[in-house]
Length: 215
Length: 215
Image 1 (cartoon, chains in turn red, brown):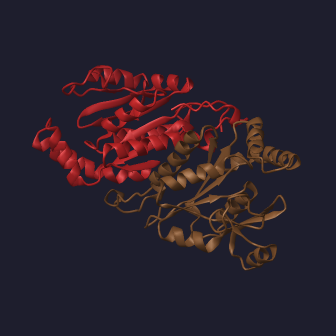
Image 2 (cartoon, one colour):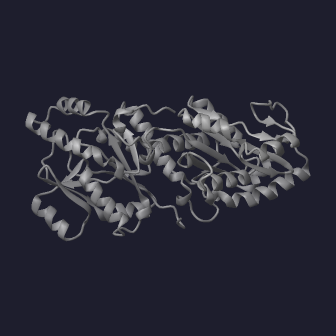
Image 3 (cartoon, chains in turn brown, blue):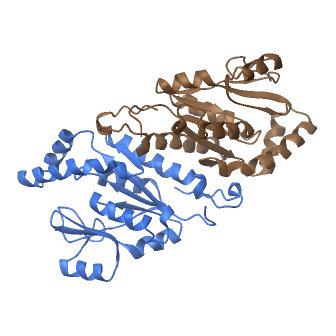
């Protein structure tokens, strides 16, 4: 229980190709109080991706410098590339009462949860984790092939990784079984609204006089 | 974590006059999977109330017989009348995978939580508790006076009780600060949807193949 209402860190993970970008976009369009934490990566931009909007694209040298400077809340290597979550931005937003949405790979999310629960972060109670589960491996394959940006071998590799990753759902607070985007969104939205209603998140004194819930 | 998805027991409490009947009605109209647990009471029916729909109206003698026969999940006296929650109906509904909505006075809810958490019920993990908080005592008084079914003295008594009851919000999982009914409903609905997404409520094996969430 806190004296002041601080924001939530909402972590959304899914096996590669699981549709989490679309879900995150819908959530961001819905809530003016929700801001996106732009990850850093060393992988090459895909068609249409903008630096600073989709990712902050860094060289390996610059990424490793920031690791050493402890500027990441978590970082991980995936498919030979670095991915990381910059810490200062998130702390600023939470202090201002805003919620921060993190679109994080499963490996990185594990590191993030361990770090936050282990006391490496000022707002451990802010953390809310959501696993977006593909309805089946077959459907995941169809989606990856439809995207058509990757070679057959890359797709096979991604599927093998995805199958292993799907086992990690038990580590998350919530599971959304991915179906129609509207349904995924309804569930994601519900989780955020419900988390804000939790007793443990209300200001200690007279919550009924502080009805300034914002979504 | 369970092998099979069972229903939820959703307890909604509010200080007297707090508007919980309207919220419960909206939730019941929304979800075909949600059934209302009709409480028993010894108080006299108010205008428009139907036996078996709003309450099961019992004599004191019959109510006390059922207490002795352990047919209530909880029971309490309030304003000189008995109120109680019949147990067998709820157990049947949960086994069938349906969710049960309970509109329970705060005193009764406390007894119910204590009993369920203390192991007196087959499905302790089913319990989800929501406190509907009036935005202010002044507004609560306005509402009670608008209803115009009670005398001045009764209203004063109810307000004094309500003020004490408002302190019990910390015992509940969730708090909804009562505003416009549409907003109260949106939050109540979100809590039910989110609770169904909780990892701990998913079937152990392959939740992604059992996408039969029903609201």
